[in-house]
Image (cartoon, rainbow, N blue to C red; front, side):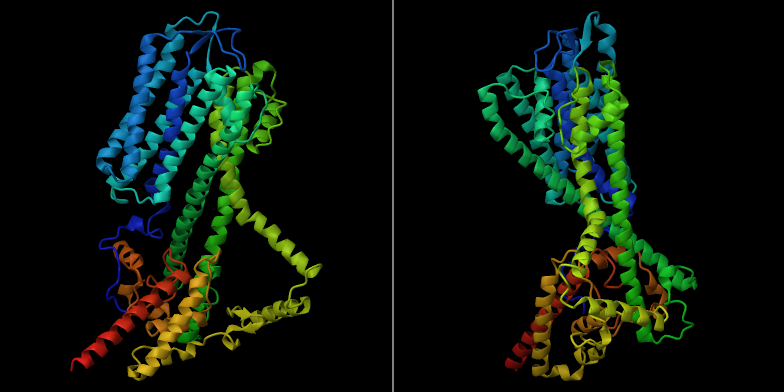
Length: 623
């Protein structure tokens, strides 16, 4: 396949190709801005909460559901708090415009980072000064004071994350603009929408039910998160009527945020990490092949045959090796993702329990009570037998519960790909053996398994693929690599229009089958003989050779050249170009799955040959 007419980016950067950007810099270039864009609106909402109520109240007048008797804050404190909110809102707007590519990175980031740092510094100074310079005799600090502390902490955290992002961009690790999709940028808008919905709903219900605004916010939070703690509930007819649309709208809005987090933080992050891990493993394997180090189990039997394998056998072994690399890396990352998400969930549970215990120990809570309370609310059970009092526990619960939603979502999703899949497969297998026998029968399945084991031992570890107990090379529905020579476009017989038409029909037929495989989950993996047949149709099978025969200059390419090749659509693989299944030019490298690579390559081949035939016919008609 030559390079005519390829639709490719003129100067693709390394950070546009997932397998080339180191994981730590992917987090800095993509995950950190997304996290800042998600937490920034939350911090703005907390700043608004800190302005919604005076920071001091008379002791004994603060009770759940009642309006406390507050003491007016000094005017200078209100002014500083308002200025802090203005800086934070400008920072948030600057980041949003930068993500939407309305403002340049070099202009937006200093505004965003500087504004959030200033907002954090103002709130930190204010929360330190107010208890020291104001009269607290017979008074207590209200929830608004603690919302200011949480807002200051979040501003400092997200601005520090963006500092890492700017450092990576300025040191040339990636380009100075966010490579975010529309759905990734919309996560920030969805978070803003949800927080506005929460704040407006709290304002309405505080007026209808005569609650304090921050108690109403606490109620709205556990209502939309379906916790149902029960210490606050609408008592008026109007409040109960408004609950119907409020709960439905809030849960739908929250569902959008959760779906975006699952899609962006889990699926796309896993795709990036899998591509990067696979590339690192492939590079390690090729280095071991070049050095002759055969200790790694994954290389057996490829590098331990004393050159007894033919070229075709070596090619097939290298193909199987790449499939093992893909399978191993995907398996490791799935379980690593489960361990990390379980650890994060456990930290949220245990650390949250410590915070609730410290907040409520004067009310007689033990640590076990706080463990029980946190666990019940993490799983959104919400019995309501244990409730928070009037301390900083309620503001912390709002922050903690908003963090608990994505954490629990990630954990459940990770379990679905690992533990739940094991239970699912075990259930299906048990059903096949008992109530719902498999269509091939138990005897045939056991025979296929035993036959495969015997063949594996007979070939001393040589990898052979089977379909229903038959080797792939002998299976009647498999295309053989021996037919490659008859499908190569350079073959003289292809000058005949009849054979060209037959080949075009074959390409169209295969495109139809591969199109159905594009949506497979998990992605479809093709056998070696199927790949040989497809490459024969494309016309680039002749360049395939063992890795040991690749010229040293082509064994590895620069990151810039690899980024150019991997970003090309269709994939770059030219006539006569030598490549190996484990080399840098392999179709099994990069972030494209096999079905997508083949579909793009076959479609481009058909398009180019039809154009060539039309041009040839037009030239003949004019002579």
